Length: 132
Image (cartoon, rainbow, N blue to C red; front, side, top):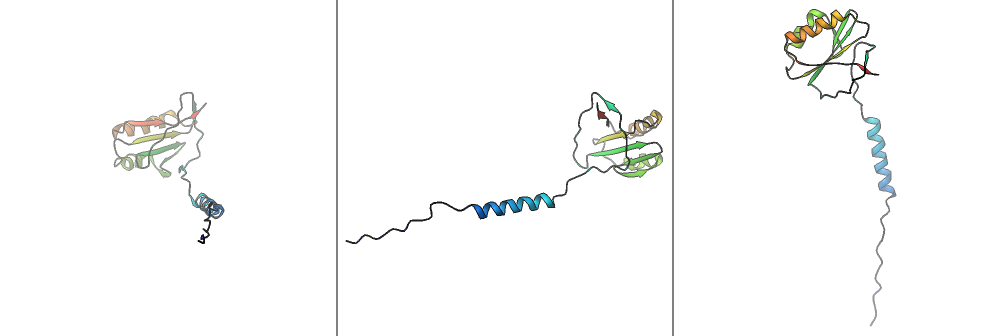
């Protein structure tokens, strides 16, 4: 009886092409990804505090108010003190407000902004500082 010769199959898979494709996809997504950057209208010199902590909040659940000399900005858009109340009146009462005030600004101006926030019953207010 004649024995049939059995063909040996490929015992290992060549992964070189697969690794190349995965690497190219990785590079593509790294290059094409847009990283989120905070929009701030004013270049501020924040005061420092020992108890500063990084605060994270989700989008649409917070507003950032920036104060410098004679300029106020909400989420990167400059507004006047008179426009501040109406612009924040439609904001969710459970949302957070981050106040970034330049260290050289008059304390009176910060108190005026906090007073407006209190009248609007916005209670979750954070004063942003740099950590020492």
